[in-house]
Image (cartoon, rainbow, N blue to C red):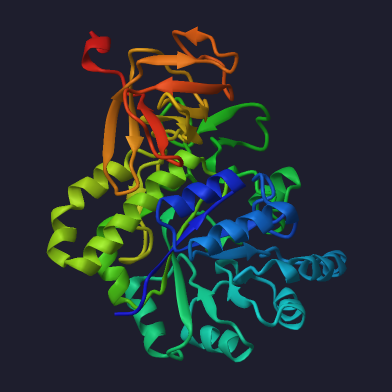
Length: 415
């Protein structure tokens, strides 16, 4: 069995630390330019230095996405950008464009080059092509089945790695090569500025009846004809490993710390359990399903892994996330009275129950006994986001632990 890397996204330094703390073997980030998530917070060179130090101190690898499709105007800037990355000690670059790939090979020869899914990597000949050019890894197109991936593994060099997405949002366009956003808004998905028009509501307008909208189906709310469910493969870890995939990739550089913690921790547990004992993995399947459902998602699908998708892979009546838990904060430190100190992200009150996500994969339900605001005043609730708080839960919590609160209405509230 090949080694399995759990690769987790981070859109900020805070989220990167969460990804590492909750079990990532590697983290991928974007810089301030040339990545496909322009709307994420992304990392300055200064942030990257801190990120590299945090990751390497914990034996975690750090990859930087530079996966735009470059125009002529971009090439000089990319060269300069790679020169600035050179002293940082990053472990890999994720690249789509052949010209960018060759610049990375020239300027950062010691850094692994990974070929992005955006390059439409659908066959073993393509993998071998990139290997001959010096690629360490190719990220498979999302449209490949497990059978196709297994065949690719059999036809590529042993030292070449396959990375595949196992969780997160699916793109309506082939491997993310989408023109909709640029056509409708002028913001190019292939330059990192996608406006996600696949999540919009559409209707039909007849040419001679301007302003008269016809729903695509009978639902008065319209229909979300391009809106895919989210990928989730946590129940198929054995199949992914048997296909010869080296890196299990989580999508979501624009996701919250709560999302990253929940998904990273669940997949970490599932991978480790299966390696320890297939019986243990099977026994804990209900727990993985329960935990993965505590992050925001759009319902789940297995994508193309078991064949072509059909109408059950889409959500036609809504583009809303399922969100059963709210992010409260991440413990920064514990004061001398044993109170958890953190920046509050969403409202909570004294007397409410909060769930602490422990690093070992379990959860601890705690009652909020007391809250002190940044002025040291005792308050009954914390309604203001990003306020520094000290909270008494009755016991000390380790720094780095994520706190969340269930948001689903209880039966008593529904009466």
